[in-house]
Each structure stands twice: as C-alpha cells, then as structure tokens.
Image: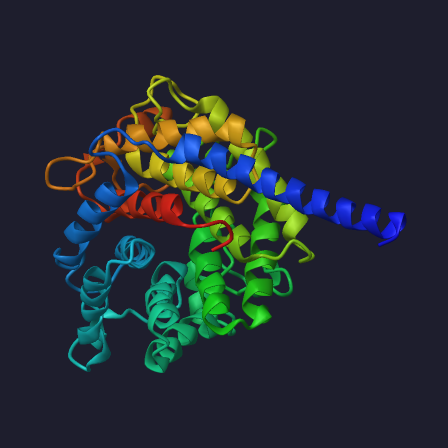
Amino acid sequence: MTVTEGLTRWLKSAAVASLILGAMSYAAGQQKYFTNWPDGTSPQEIGKRVAERFVTSPHQDPQKITYPEVCAWYGALTFAQLSDDKDLSARLIQRFEPLLLASGSKLIHRERHVDFEVFGVVPLEIHIETKDPKYLELGKSFADTQWESLPPQTLVREGLPPETVPPGLTPETRFWIDDMYMITILQVQAFRATRDPKYLDRAALEMAAYLDKLQQPNGLFYHAPDVPFFWGRGDGWVAAGMAELLRSLPQNHPKHARILEGYKKMMKALVSFQGADGMWRQLIDHPEAWPETSSTGMFTFALITGVRNGWLDEETYGPAARKGWLALVGYVDQNADVTNICVGTGKKNALEYYLTRPRHTGDMHGQAPVLWCASALLREASH
C-alpha cells in the first residue's frame, strides 16, 4: 500500500467514525429528553390508555363520523403500529368494518367540505398498515375529490367565489387556519399510501399559500383575519399540519424551504409563550387565560417531531417538548379522558368570548393530540 492509499483509507475511516459519533451524540440528546419518564407518564403507558379508551368508545356523533374522531382514530392507529400492539391494531381496524357495509356507510359524510373529507385519512392509514386495496380505494376517493371543481351552489354557500382561489389549490380553499391541517393531512396520507408525488405537491402548494397569506410577523396565526386573537387550538392545527407535511416532504422539494421557514418561525414563538407549568393557554399570548389541553397537545406534537427529525435545535426545543408532554399527561384522568379541552369555537372579535369558553372532558379534540404525541415519541426520524 502506498502512502497516498493509506492516507486515503484513513481519511475515509475518520469520516465514517465522525458520522457515527455524530449520530451517537444526536441519539444521546434524544435519549435525554424523550426517555426516563416518571412513573405513569411514558408514551407507551399514556398512549395505550387513551387508545384503549378510543377503541371502546361510541362514535362521538351518532349521525356521522366527524373530524375530531378521525384525528383520534388516526392517532390510535399510528400508536398501535409504533408500539407493535397487534391486538389493538386489529380492534381499531375492526371498528372500521361496519362502515364498509351499506348499513354503516351512512356514517361517512360525503359533503364537499374539509371537515368531512379529512375522513379519508383513516382508511388511508389502514391501507398503509395492511396493504388492503379496499381501504386505498376509499381513502383516495376523498383526496381526489378534494381537487375537483365545486358546484356553484356549494361555492355560494361556503363563500368561495372561484376567482379568489389561486391556481393549483383546491377549490375548497377558504384561508381558514384549521385548513392547514384538514386539507394537507389528507393529501399527505394519499401520498404516503400511493407514493404519487401529485398529492405531496398539492399539500405543499396549499401550505405555502396559507403561510404567505396568514402567518403574522410574530410567527403565530389569528383565528381569522377580522379576529386578531391567537386562539390555541386554531394555531394547533397549523403546527400539527406543518409537522405532518414536513415528515414526508423531501428537502429538495420546491416548497420545502418555505414551509420549514414558517414552521421554525412558529415554533420559536410558541416556546416563548409556553407557561412555567408546561402548558399553553386558551389564548396563546394571554398568561391570564386558562391552560388548554388540545392546543398544548398539538404544539407538543409539533415540537417532538421537529426535535426527532433534527429540524429544531434539541437543546433549545427538547426541554420544551418534554415539559409539554409531562404537563399534558397531568390532565389525563383516571378514565383516560383528557380534561380542560376547549369546546368547538367559532370566531368572534371579543376577548372575553375566548377567555370564558366552556371546557370539556374526553372530547376527541383533546384525545387526538395526546395520541399524536405518544406516536411521535415512539417514531423514528422521518417516519
């Protein structure tokens, strides 16, 4: 072996060793913040309790499957898979079987609206886990329909004149902040199930358009353009939607940099508003507002996912994510019901309206993000 060959071999070995050490160092940071949980607070324990609560619960709305139930179902499915709980997975899938029958299909609401079309996320997740084509066909039909033209009467009812929707976006585009989850998660799930990049392109274009139009200079989002309040769960949908999209969006995608920029800007703002108790408030920037669990769960999910994937500095955001999880699980009661969940809330330009909103226990708006967090804590990077 020549001196040059020996030096080349040594340099290659050193480079490999450096990569290994870097990976070990990164993993150590992850271990520091996302392991060694106090008794009764681990994601395995909490996720199992909340998922079991879901699978034995009746439909939240006996007339139709609504988006909070969809979100909880999705979280329970991912938790069961990531924790390798095959019995739980089987029961969650069995819960879906009646919906495939004529007698049960009436619970699937096919109205053209983002809150109903997000239903497709569940059959798409079941297909991803089982490869059963009947679930793919059903789930994909929601994602495909979402980009079809809307009839004039629907546009009028939803206040969506076609000339206001930029090219390439779904005609269901309303520029409401919850759309940043409802629309994008459906398209991302269709991509995950099919690997067809058109679905990812749709989600990324939609998210970038919403960021450009709605993100405020401080990184957060008003509940509505004419309602200048940073309502917790409204912003929670945004945070969770960006985190889900970035998990699947390649770094070389034309919209990746824009979305990552918006995500980091939001995460920086959120950490600055996290309470000393680890919670976020009903109104994010009002410390006198009450601690609200659905938003705390959504923000914690977004932070965990960012630290896990290396988008966020672990020393800055790891402690905030851990603190959020430990605070959140303190609101899971003996029945595995989450407490302090804000009721469904329409916009209103009045401070007291938000500060005095009623609180629910066990509502799936709050159950769902606990399951998302448990899944994120078990999930490896970029999965």
